Length: 95
Image (cartoon, rainbow, N blue to C red):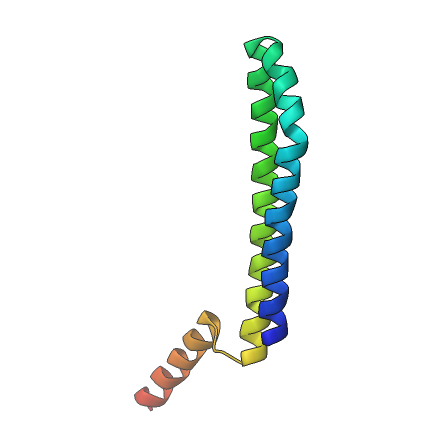
């Protein structure tokens, strides 16, 4: 459990540092675009937004996988497990 939380922490930290690095690297690009037309700048920001959305989705998927692993390690009941149990209890109550 501690290892999964540690992995999640380092993944979040790595993501934050990657964003910081990208912003620093892209600041020169942003300045160059600003010197050009507003249309080019808008196109650049649209591309950055798409890239950000893609990164967000990848991070979200990774986080879901980590949570699923933690739930499995802790042997917690899932929604499906509870539904099965409810059906079983309903059948036993009818008998």
